Image: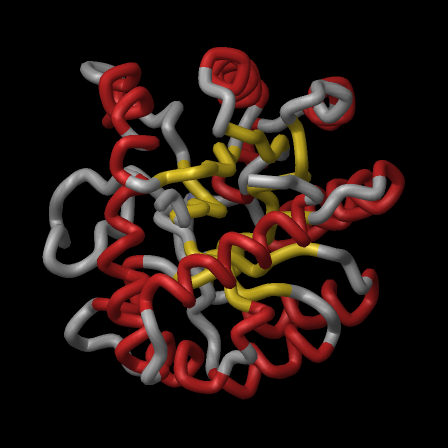
Length: 256
Ligand SMILES: [Zn+2]
């Protein structure tokens, strides 16, 4: 039974340089049916598309991550647009706002890149994969303004904010942080979220769930996240994995 749909991973990260092929080739045997590989800049887009050409269960989101827009030149948007025509591309991402790191581009620059990429997604009828770190208010305002299809990944806001986002038609992505011992908000979100709005994700190689915390994360570890969320909700883990797989298929227009 292969029900693990990882809606957010970064297998182009350096952490996989030593054994990327072994890790990717081993995922299906561990129950992984699909992975959305999220690109972060033009170089990452190239690597991501090459991975999708090699592994049939990988689909790609193309975009410029907020941590990379400080280095971005205007032709990067053309690179995203060009890449979006590849048959493996099913979303524009990872895009969004990150006000946590001081070295990131100024907020106006991040907002400008986010807007232009949401507009591109809407022009191409693709969903967006949004990153929101310490930028809840601006993220919610962008969603209200554009009403995009998509997901707020690694969601770190309140249950109330999650409700506002799902009321606007978007999905919420939950991952390893839900399993952390000090987790409060993600647990409240996991408890109250309508099941048809939930996507599971890793953000691999980051955010490994308990009991793998501190190790390099890969998509098979979603089994732990799913078990924890099912426990929080009082539901069956397999049923949760099946429903979240279906949610991801619906959002990204896929059939895994
Ligand atoms: Zn990410």
